[in-house]
Image (tube, rainbow, N blue to C red; front, side, top):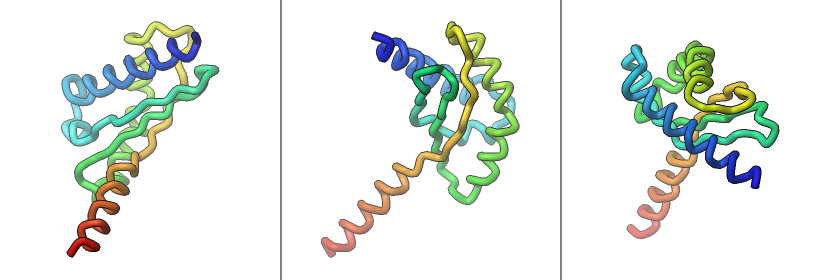
Length: 112
């Protein structure tokens, strides 16, 4: 049963983060980031947030911005999520979309 609670927390965190980035963040550059997945460890110590962005040339900037806003995002999540402990946030770029596009390009080049 604890797994169901964990999945619910992950889903709630994903929704709240996405809404915050789009509606409430004051930095317009954050609106270019899309949250793809949230994973929380079983002991609620760490929350890994996977994100993607449309402009790959700005990945370093996005990473710096997310690290800069880490405490503010954590405070916002703590107010929205009723968990006994608010995990540390870890932001990671989600490479699955880029990998999928690469595979599609390889398949298309083989079909030609």
